[in-house]
Length: 179
Image (cartoon, rainbow, N blue to C red):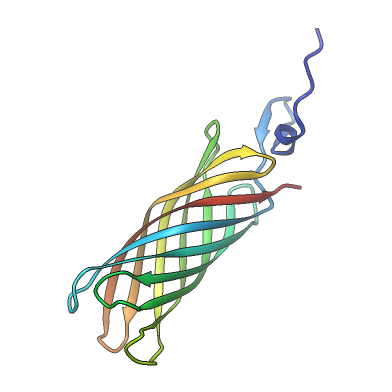
């Protein structure tokens, strides 16, 4: 008895292996847009919370390994009102095997963070290291939802020769491009 044809969206993300079984094909590239919340511990002013957005393009080099860039803008709500952060970072991403409709991943990045305030017109650039774990929820036609519930950011504050530690969570939409 012939089976019904698969929808085009499902065929797009699946491939047949040599032994006839079906495997999930990773996207060639993707772009994620997130809402961010960051909590930063600070030994000199008090703990801070920042909110903002990020755009994360990614290119998959192999079935599991990719490279992503991170463009994040954050705004402080509390301690130093008007403080803004711009983070530019990039690094590798490892995608684990898909589990039904979600795909877990981990990543690490290095880059720079620019801090400005309304109180003065000084812009301070500091090196950052960032690592996190998240997952993609598959939807339809290459569109999905991405959640990063655990992310660590270390910022080297050069004028104090000290590291600030931040913990973040992100959620947003992801657009996947398949071959």
